[in-house]
Structures are given as structure tokens and as C-alpha cells.
Image 1 (spheres, helix red, strand yellow):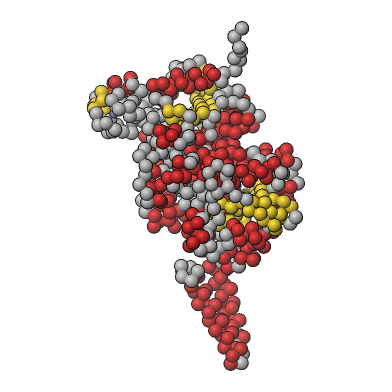
Image 2 (cartoon, helix red, strand yellow):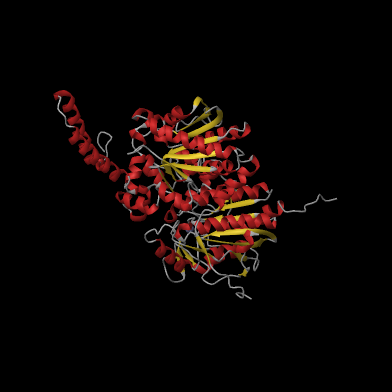
Length: 327
Length: 290
Ligand SMILES: [Zn+2]
């Protein structure tokens, strides 16, 4: 990637440059080039659709990792009002890789949580590249249990490659922190909307991914393992990540077919990084619709519905049972 | 009830032949080399000693039927849900072959068997994973069987005992569906928990990844075998990511114990007795003696 542009966008970029040049020429030299420009615009439109609607799984993964893609805090700023960030797991420390707090969504108090990647190298180092430690998950759980106490809906914005695989993370029980998050989140008596906004990597994403409605941005990915690690394990070759991305069926379109997610939130053409405002507005509209629907469900049936949603997942064959066997 | 549709006829199993799968067994013949202390062990003696090295205490890996023989009361095991068969839901390259090879190698249809059993007279639902079947990883069938174990236990008012050996974590060849088994099984654990029933989770070598980060670490009581690898990210991944030297004994049962992640390390020869005692302590109908 150069200048925030992917290799596959280059032909389009060159065309756009050419159009800009002609436009500049039109104003500066007072020449009418509108027909030439219109032809090129048409070509660019076609190319844009051609490129962005036929992205491979691996291209989607790269797009979801674009450094200019909106981060959790940026979405929070665009979508919620009066966000008050709350900190700490009350046990070990505050994990900057996960943010959370209270806010209002169109006047309704909500709890919002999510992993936070850095917007530059310095912030990335402070936030451990958005890779949470156990205390991050324990903070998220603490805030979600608080939401339950005060009957506030929860919005979980997910953008994480995975839980941090570090020595201290293991010493402090990364696996159990994730398991407890999954278990407790499943039984909270408030509406939960989860949105995979960028990367949804493995247990580190699932830990905060148990919801009544699970949405996914158009170019986000969600998988049991990152494509690189999958390729490394299967073929001892991490350069085959694109093959792994294909095989893992990790795009929003694949996942809706497998029942893992419920709806896809459209992104601006070319990806959320091309237009933050539009991406934010799309997500806001999706949250309005989904929270609205969930707030109508009586509290008593909410948990049962959520559990039933996950209970169905998986695919196997039920062989015929031979009754006379072992008789 | 919906669930009854899936109820199988109980299958009575005593102990099947080829009960033992010792991964470390490379030598034919009467002697087995211990991979830890390098001593040669007489195989007959190894069998008598629960497949534990007498010299150094190394716990050899054992298969599900040998495990069953060691912990469950003889003839008590009724296998359930044997009729669930794995598919290749993502058409993942090579997965169908891998499944077939694992079936051939272990004689099992999947990486976990479940059923009702008794341990020292205490009835329970029992599930045992086999590392030799695709590293004991959890796909749809394993997740479904674990879930049904808890559901059956709720229905029968029974405790659950699970031996995990999920070194492979969530099975990547089933993609997101494997990840979703972590949610499904954790939810089943909690339903059982809310019914006030006991869940004993026994972590055998190795229990990692999505298996550890879901049902395996959610037991009321966590027990591990000596030296068993227990953790989230495997040691190699931790080493490669952090580029740090791993502490001695990193992610062993002893390490997990020291950091407060498990309740107890139990020698294999003592497992049946320990499980039996804990189960009977939680048994129904205890009345104060007059
Ligand atoms: Zn030895």
C-alpha cells in the first residue's frame, strides 16, 4: 500500500487524477472539456464498481486493516452524545486496548465498549495495537454488568485481531477472562447490539461479541483465526494468507449465510476510510433500527431469544439411529 | 420435546480393544522410552501404572477408552449422541480427508465422546476428548456434544465431568462455526450452573485456545494432570509474538496453579478417587447425622 492506496485501486486512482487534471484545465484555460470529462467519469464509475464490488476475501481483510479506517472512539464520537469514558478492571490496571463508558444514543442512555487501535504509531504502542489483555475483557465485563444493573442497552463495537498472546496475559488468565465474558454477556437482561466494524479475530472478538443482533460492516472480517496464522499452521507458509482468507469464509456476505451475523452495514464505496462521516451515518442508522427493534422485546424473553440464536449454530449430520444395535 | 428427537438409544460400552493411543509410542516391542527421563519402561508395567512413568512421573497421553477405564465404574458408561457426524460446512480444502484420517487413526468418529457414567458410584454426565483426533479441536459436532452433555445433565439433575484435551482449540476448518461453539458451550455451562449443578473440568495435556477460553475453564472446580499444558495462546505463538524467552514451565498445570487459574493438580492414579470424593460431597440427599 502507498499513500493509503491499495495496488488494486491504482487504475482508478490514475483515472481520477486525469479527470482532476482536465477539470483544472477547464477552469484555468477556459476550455470546454465536459464531454471528455463525462466519458472519463463514466469509465471511473464503472471501474469503481468493478473494483470494489469484486474484492477478494484477502482484499477485504486488508481493507478492514486500513490505517485510516475509523476507530472505535471515532465511531463513538460520530454516533453517540455525552460519552463519558470509564476506566479500569478494579483488579489489576486499566487496559487502553479496550475503551468503554456511558453515553446517550438519540437520547437513550447506553453503555458502549470496544477495542481501540491507535491512530498513529505512538498511540498504537500505548494501546498495544488494540490487542487486549485479560484486564481489558474484565473492564468490558464490569461495564456491561453495570449496564445490566441500570437497564441500559449495550453497544459493542468490535475491531480486534485477537486477544494479546503475551506472557503476562497468560499469567493473568487470558483464556478464562474471555470465557467469563462470553458466559456473563450471554445472560445480561438488556438489549445488546454487536457490530464488527473492522477486524473480528477469534476468541478476542467473540468475548465481546455475544449479542441479540450481530451486525458487520460491509468490508469487515470475522473469523476463528487470522488468515496469516491459519496459513502458518496449515501450510507452514504465512504468505498463503490469501488462500486461507478464501477458505475461512470470513467476509460479511459469507457469514450471513452461515448464520453467524444478522445484517450487513453498508460502507462508502471503497471502504469506510474513504468517508468517515458517511460510514458513521450508516452505522448510526443501523443502530437506530436494531436497538429500536430490540427495545420492543420484553426483558423476560430477551435472554432466551439470545441463547436460542447461538444454540442453533453449527453444522452436522444426524445419522439414522439403528434401534436394534447393541440389543 | 425437540431435544428428544436427538436422543439416541443408549449404547452399552465396556472397554473396546485398541483402547490406548500413545502418541509418544514410536517403538514396537516390549519397551517404551520415556520422552522426559529417557528411561526404558516395560510396556506391561506402564499399562498397570496408568501410563505414567514410574521414574519421573511423566504422563503419557491416553485415548478416550483407556481414560474411561481409569475413571469410570466398569460397565457404567452409556454412550450418547453417537449419531452426530461432522460435515465440511465451508468446503475447506483437505478437511474431509483430515477427518477421515483422524477417524482411521483413533477409531473414533469425532474428537469427543459423551455419555452417562458413574464414578465410584456417583452418577454423572461424562465427556472425554481425544487429542489424537485433530488435536482434540472443537468443531460443530464436539460443540454440539458438549452442549448436549450439559442439557442432558440438567434434565437428569446430574453433575458434569469433562476431560478436555483441546490442544487445537476451535477447529479452524469449520471457520466461524467453530468459534460459535465457544459461545454455545459456555452458555450451556451457565444454564447447568444456574440449575445449581456441579461441573468438574479436568484439563489434560494440552488444553488451549478456544477450548480453554470457553467451557473448559468455566468449571466450578478445575483440575489438571501434572505437566499438562493449559492456556489460551500456545507457547510457540506467545514466543513468536513477544520475542521474549518464556519462563520455565510456562503454561504447565503447575504454572496455572501458581497463578491461581486452577484448583488442583491430581496424579492420574488418584483421579478416580478425587473425582469420586468431590462428586459425593456434592451429592443430593446428604442429611446431617443424628
Ligand atoms: Zn520418565
